[in-house]
Length: 391
Image (cartoon, rainbow, N blue to C red):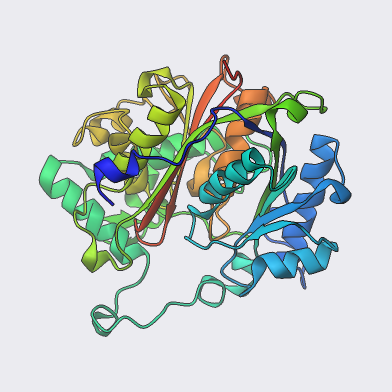
């Protein structure tokens, strides 16, 4: 999609919809026999309690998971729902930002009153291979890449070649994530991580070590959205949806136009334009950190630093606690949890930070947050802007 076409968004009344409920399911390693539907339903019920609503209020359902072919249909059957709107769009980890955009459109047009977005995965329990089976690609599979890490390793190696990015910069992303995770009671990782430990970790796909790679966990989450006028009467402070955009550029990494520029360059600009904000206005950036190179690429492409300067930016401590830009305050996919498709959990943390519910890791000020999702091998990108105020 071209720069000009993505900026021509479908008309949307800024802040006409708001998030009113947010919850995680159980995370980490779930009890034997737990299914992805169990986790989606658990998170959905918790999010409804958070919002002060019930299953009877829900008339739109959005969900995706790699483990169930008809995820939305299955969840509705499990919960006994018969929604007016249902959407199982599957774009990988960016699906849930897209679901939020679709839900906002349905709410604004009057197609529904209360929308549920849900996700669940038992990726750790059943293994990554079983949860996310790889399709045969005649142009790549014969070379036996270890996907998705080999694809991200290529992007990292190219960024190092073009801009002089160092392994120390990549490791700094992992260290910052761990520092945030140590303030999150439900984060998977409980031990401090030093730069030296990150650099000396087992190499998985050069230049990425084990500490450059996301966790493999079970887990899920859910969000509840409704119209802004109704949101103001519910139990939690509304978190308004101010802007969003999505983009896809390729499926296989061998077809990525540039290994060092992602679709976030387009979606960030479009979502911020819709919201009427700029990168310097944000208090929080939640970016999809399946691998450490992701954080560097997305911070550059979203405009938080210049292209090629992401390495020194993160290496300076800018994204660690106390730094100039709060990034992935829950600990991210690197140290908090990563149940296959992580995008919904980025949105949950952004909502909680804006509502002031994050305890030790709570930011002193969080009125405007960005959540950016990534799917496939840097294949699909989606950005959402959330805020505490609608004027």
